[in-house]
Length: 127
Image (cartoon, rainbow, N blue to C red):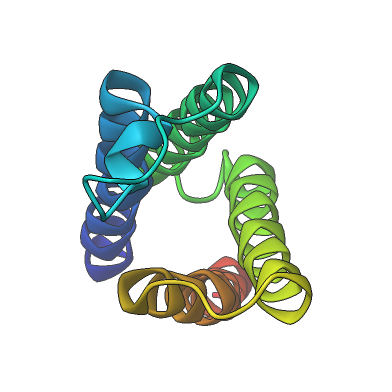
């Protein structure tokens, strides 16, 4: 159980950090070329909003680590949200084109880690 809690805390820090930086720096931080147009106001607003949701997912994961059995449903919900985000990245890739390398890596994490965590959690809850 202790290993699960440690891993859960480390995993929870990922969306917390990325969401926090997204809130602080907005969509303009994604522009890689100086000559690119500034981020559109609506896009930046939506980006920062979703970064806030990402912070909430991180907080749910961290909160769940405190009581693995008692907050199991919250962990499942947070992992579902994280997984759906990875699916949304996949949809973007299919419809708009390949994203940056770090976003492809993020999508891999978002599609694999929640499944692994939920399987691990299910095993712990059975014991």
